[in-house]
Image: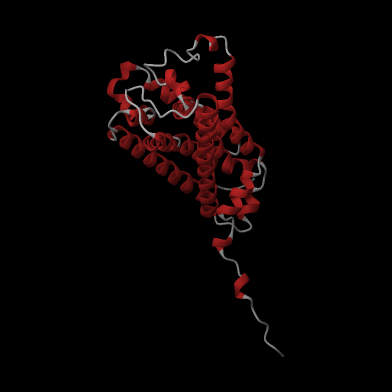
Length: 290
């Protein structure tokens, strides 16, 4: 009697389950992902249409103020300024919703579809599942941000030319410096999106309702912004992570001031890490019934 040969290559290995690549492909095929990418492209198109076709387009100001003193007023001066203005528009609310959607929908959607328990029975280790979900959510948020910047620059170039970036704080730069300054602004805004992303990820673990997780994160950020606008709170506002949301303006100064951006970025990364740790510990002990 011959001894059966055991194929050790096909034994169960946790690291082979639910890879980031597999999860990324799954999420890229979802309609909500394509809609988010489409919105990032539609925003600059809508703004250009409003500027060129609006009632103020014939006055020469382009509908964006006097063109000299403020960021929005410089939007029509060229592709670099237009992309910067779209980042300003997007960072206020659009990117917050998108970051909350990609992270808040991650685990809660599997629970709402009743597929979460089957994934864990595959078996996919719980922490590996959370790791894949978090990484893919952040990747999709970063891709959306990149699409917004690239689409805005291309559309701005076609509509307004490719003049160098002009700062509302004074001065302008060549193409290389313009790209550098815009990259700093986009990178910092991306880091600030870790705040709604972390809140949404934690809520996604705590609830089986994706819309509830997304909505909770957006509401918390809105409340934090409202509190930050109340001057009576004084220095207490510095404790709010959203207080550093516009620190990227320091990247537009003749000499970049890094202090506030460093504080804001550190605050965002630390808060995101803390929220993810809480989510992992909670998920480790959660009774999965759906």
